[in-house]
Image 1 (tube, rainbow, N blue to C red):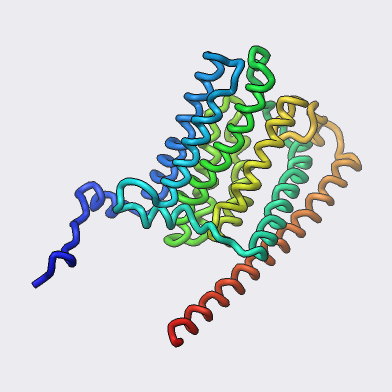
Image 2: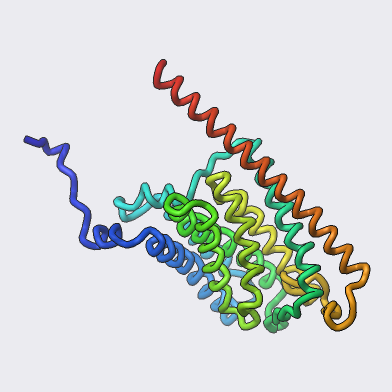
Length: 310
């Protein structure tokens, strides 16, 4: 005979149906849903700010409050209680040691620099599209700065939570990190196809970006390092786009001639050499991060065993 305190509420029909879905489908749907929940309100607020009272960046305050609430909800706060543990797990952990932070930032920075160096090679081999800039001449400088700053925060936080957290983590457990990062990277790339200049030609670029951020999330089991680098990277991208008219996947404002239209000059081979050297350094940095994370897990397991036997 069970007591009142031991009676558990059976899961709802919707939750039972959800749990029957394959892990990959649940992960993709969860990631897309969290991405939309985080980005759509900001798009609405930003558009409204540009139409109404554009002299003041008033959208920043409600967007900041919403982003804070989004972050808390993604970490397990709020309704429904039945998904709190899953949401907390998918947002990943928040407490990292200094050793993990240092190794993760070194690996991520080298990864992004290596990607930029490789793009110098790619831009001499393939003609990549130019990113167009919207006409922002009607927006006051203070408002434009506020909106761009908020956009970097929203995209960095929301994309890391939704893609590297809710989408990638469940697939890591089911399929392993390589497949999880690859699948997430493909969807991450297609998510940017809303920009008219983004086509299949740029999909390898987004796969590379996803590999940099996704590997950090897997090795640290946290979205914080990749989120920090994502926000900073977005800031540099916006700065280069509006200041020099250069998109994030281009290394010069004016395209240089392709090597197929002439010959590979010394600057091209120098770019190749630098790219290979940086790629080697990146592999070393990620290997070191994996070692640091493994040692930390081993120390944690030993501490847990000692605590249980105490």
